[in-house]
Image (tube, rainbow, N blue to C red; front, side, top):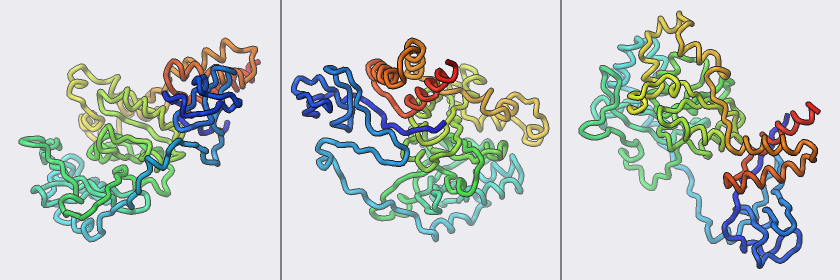
Amino acid sequence: MNQFDLPVLKFDRKRTTAKLCPCGKNNSDGKFAPYVGFVNCGFCHSCGTNFLPPINRDESYSQNKVDAGAHSKIVKPISFISVDVFKASLSKQANNTFIQFLVERFGAEITTKQIEKYFIGTSKHWSGATVFWQIDHKGKIRTGKIMLYNAIDGKRIKKPYSHIQWVHKVIEQSEFELKQCFFGQHLINDNDKPLAIVESEKTAIIASIYFPQFVWLAVGSKTNLSFDRITALKGRKVVLFPDLNCFDEWQKKANEFSILANITVSDLLEKKASEQEKKDGLDLADYLLRFDLNEFQKDTSKPIESKIESLPISLIAEVVTENHKLIKAVIKNSIDKDVDFMLQVAINKCLFQSKEFSSSDYNYFLNESNELKEST
């Protein structure tokens, strides 16, 4: 069935921002509770009605924001790294310790393909340092992250300090307006493979060797998984592979971003990890590197491979929220009511108990209410 977009609905604590209820009553007593960002949409405690924003996939929402101009700011154009700087990083690869690790582990042929696919660069900022370029889907170079790795075990050098720096800072590009994108984002064009997102660039590169059936992207940091970045993946099938101890956070984000893409979350590491591994915060690459690549590709009986090959059923944890449980209960208990009534009750319960009602919740309501119709 069709999916519809609905803004995330939250009650504005300042009820008196709305002078009137849409039903025409004066709101000086605060009985009309507007949603954040709206003055004419919300819930009226007087007449008991929800006034929803327009629900339409093709039209933008009319958000009558109060004093919007007071909070407006000048949006500066995004800055980019020059192609000359980018090209210069693609030389002297023999000195690159991360590339040395890849060659030792996977051989020159596979490593060369990964260098060409992800444009793995080399920096003289530290001897043997790697540059992970962030190239967007339009081919624009947003920036490059410089990191230093141990050539033997492929681990990041963290002592005597964490070796992380940015190309735009090293070259001292003046007035640089940074807007990051996914590492590997340039690979999503003209490619209908499902997308897989991990935290680190190293993990994306290694995982793409073991599982080429995905396009592997990296977000760089668990907190960088944002609505703004997911926008570039609109309409795509996306699987999130969070590091250990990040599952709950990324599952919550998957629910928030579901209006943009078909997002699911892998619980593979959570199921496989020991308590010590959870404490250490291992990621997918740490597990994959335990397998010899040739044996891994031959033996389909290995647990990790069999789990991932069976996506999305055995590996993917469906995002089931408290709101979804509330919605399901409302529909079950209101079987003799019309759909509009059930929707109003569902929205109210979600807003009063979990404090928000999103597009994911609305689409879940549509699916559940339709199933109810078909069954009766």
